[in-house]
Image (cartoon, rainbow, N blue to C red; front, side, top):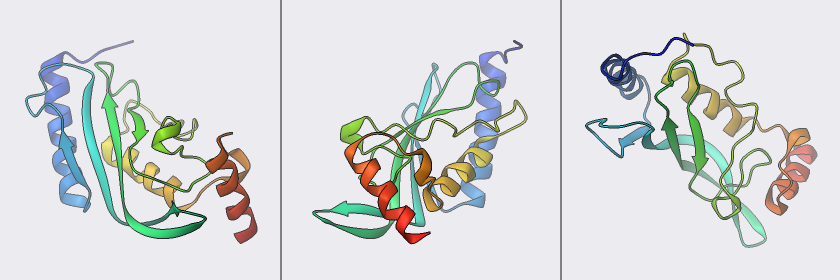
Length: 152
């Protein structure tokens, strides 16, 4: 596998982050603004993306969701990884206390020509269009799958 040297990778990521910030309302915070080492972690908050969260025995629809994105030194040949940080009621996204894992198929369409904006758009698509037939086996994900199946 071909690999970008770290300076090329930093430049590529800075350009992609600039596009993401210009084209979306998402808040993107790099844990290491200097990008001194990889993996590079960034906290991303989606705004104005409606999805449910659990609230006792009910659900409430909110428009703000936060997750951690990690980019390895093998980017763009390897897609970013993701861990959910805020409560969520979704069959394909685990609650943070259950591990925060996200749908294993996320990133399957990734190619070395893909970019962060493509990845964020795929996360947003999954967030608003759950796949109840492919739910994680956690209690919340199973209940969410049942809920979303009943709405289809």
